Structures are given as structure tokens and as C-alpha cells.
Length: 541
Image 1: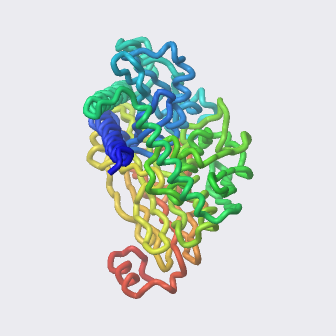
Image 2: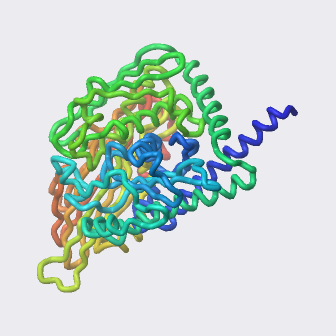
Image 3: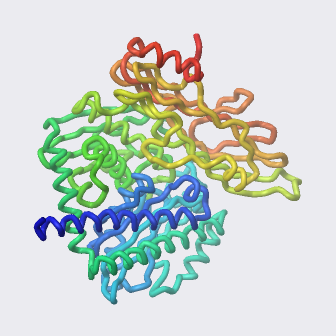
């Protein structure tokens, strides 16, 4: 074996070890976080970067929107802080939607990593916090200024000393101060664990910096991605997907231009910005567009700066996927989570028979404000956040996954953990019979969630739901999935977006959309059809 080959083997081992380092970084965040969105659902990201701020490796744990946006964000931190102002023991922070991950509820924390007094790289992480003040987590604001506290890129700690003025400002501008401040400290702590594990690794492999290893990772990743793109049929492919929007429908238009060494994804023709907070900064739209392309073209290549580099995403400034400050962006995930299905619709025309039908897409996040009724002395005020998922689209050779968070990949919070946070009770959380689109392969089922305030309380909730007016479409003759429904238990139909009230004695019922089917239903096998009926996955005629 040549010394070059041996060196490459060693570097591959170090690459795998580096991924384990950032995975432990992410697990630390989950274990120390205060809010259920992080410790129960894994709504986070973690990664390590070289001195230039280019992502070398990301944790497997985390969401594509957070990870791919964070990959760009670290460069903004370096530019805004200034290289001459970066010191050992520093910790930097922001929730700037245009330089972070798309809305104020996500805090990104970056920490420089020093070895023997020299900067060797950065650790970064992101987490969704339960509250940032303002109107709360919902789509009703008209400007970002209404949506909560905006923390520009700044130092959370300087040379190991925490900025207590910033901590006090945060405490006095959010409803759940202990959870939010606790999560910020958790973000800083997970970066510190990443740094410690990196130092252990560098000791073991006798490394003085990360640049040689980063070059190896970048070259292998880029070459493998280019090889995968080169095998694709050249050409241009288009798709338009219509979704509910806020008060009026939204068209997500996608144009793919496939070249020998890169793919351009252009959202020209997409609907203009909304006056409400469903808009997306480009950093977030691009994160999910790249995710769809990478999943369909080069899924086995680990995520880093150079494996993402061949995917170029652009959108006109006058469209809802590339809004500028001060546009409201609080629930940018509603449109952002629908971007992959729109992109995959274009990929299907390039690679027929390889991508799934449309699914529910956007999480049905439920943010509940619990309040005691007037005159109730021992009532509880609380902000409760719950993630729910509809059905995924059927695949070309398999049924769709039921109640699965594609593309975000987050987990649902457990009922027990959620009820522990505030005065709410769940009466139902079950698969929604018959919600998957029929086909040779059936769409995944949505779910039914029924929730109510406990005695002596009422709840207000921020609806941020989609696929109610425009359900997920089937593919290749498959039928559409069932549309979503938002109602009270007495049958009163509620709006799919906006702040609404659930009085004492009433229950909120969410019926989540099912995924679209794939192929004609007439081609479905008798055994699969009988199994569906036995499990009540379909409604009997």
C-alpha cells in the first residue's frame, strides 16, 4: 500500500471521526435544552467549519433548513465580528432571519476554536426557541419588527465572560424567559463540547490544524457530486405547485437548468411576497431547494460546503421566497417546507420514476398560549409548542410514510412532555383513516390531533397550516391526498392561518393532510388493498 493511499485511508477515518464530533455536539444540545422543540423534536443543527468559515462536517441530527442555512451563516458572523475581533473564549449569537436561518425564533450561536493560541476553525449550532416576544410564533405580523426581539450578530461572550446586558434584555422581552435563556446557554455549551472533542481528536491524530483534512473532504465531496451531476440528462425542467398561502393562493414556480458540473434552480415566476409572515428569506429557501436536489442527485455524499457548492439557487427579489427586511417571516417554514416538493416535481421530469408524489410538506406547528379564566386564582400561563406531521407522498415502489416530517425530519413532541409544559390535555393523537391518496402505492396517512385547555383555562393558538385548499397531488395517475381540516369539536370550521380562540369546554381538532398516491389505484395488488382495509388505512365503501 502506497503512502498516499495510507494517508487517504487515515483522512477518511478522521472524516468519520469529525462527523462523530459534531454528532456529540448536537446530542449535547438535545440533552441540555430547556424547550421541547429541541430536546423532544431535534429542531436544531450543529457543525464544524474551517478558518475561512466553510462547513467541513454537519451532525446527522438536525433539520435541512437549519443545517444548510447555517452553512452560509458562519461567513456572515466572521464578516460582522471582524477577524481582528475574534478571541479565544468568545461566543457569538444572532437570530437575524437574513443572516441566520430565516426567522427570529431560531438562534444561531458560533464559537471560534483555538489550539495552542491559534484559530483552527469554528463550531456553530442553531435551535428553535419557544418564544421571542412580539406577536409570538404565528403569521399575523405585517413587519419583522412586530414578530419579536431581533438580535444582530454580536458577542454573547467575550474571552469567556458572558454579556449579562444581553441576557437581561432577552429575559425582559420574552414570555418564557427561563426556557429561552436556558436554550441560549445550551447552544453555547454544545459548541464547547464540540471544541473539546475536536481537541481530543487532534491530539490523537497529531494535527495542528484542520486545513489539510478540510481540503481532503472538500475535494472528495465536490468530485463525487460533480460525477453524479455529470450523469444526469442535460436540459431544462419546470414545475409549478400551488399551495394555500395566507388569504390567497401561492404559486411556487421552479426552473431547473442542468449543466455538466452544476444545477441552477431558479424560482422566477413564483408569487410575490405576502403581507403576512409566511415569507422566506432566500437563505432559507435555498437551504430546502439544495436539500431536494442533493437528496435526488447525490444522497450518499456527506453534507458540507463543497457537496452543496454545485447547486446554485436564485429567486427574484419580488417573490415570496426571497423577501427583504423588514418583511414578516415568522412562519417561513410553511413555504420553505413546501419548496422540496416543488423542486422534486421538476426533478421528476428529468428522472421519471425516482421521486415521490407530493406530501403534506410543511409541519402543522401548533403554538398555544394558555391563560387562566378571569377569577381563577391558581391558573397557569404558559406558551406551548407542538410539532405535528401529515403524510408523505407515495414513492415509486413503496407506500408513503404516515405522519412523517418530510422534509424537516423533526420528531413530534410526546403528549406527556407537552402536557407537562402547560395546562392542556390531548384527547386524541392518531392516524387519520383514509387520508392517503389512492394509487398503486398509497400516500402516507395524516393524523388527527384533538387538544383542549384544562379546567379553568382557555387557549389561543396561532394557526400556521397549509394543504387545506390545495392538497398534495398524486403522481403518475395516483390520487391526491386528503386536504387538511381545522375545526372545533362541535364542527365549527376555523381558519388555517392566524390567531384564534378555543374557549373553555371546547376542543381544537386538527385533521392533517395525507400524501399523494403514486400510479393508478387499479394497479394496486389485492393483498395490499386487503391489508389497508384491515388496518383501516382506507375508508370502506
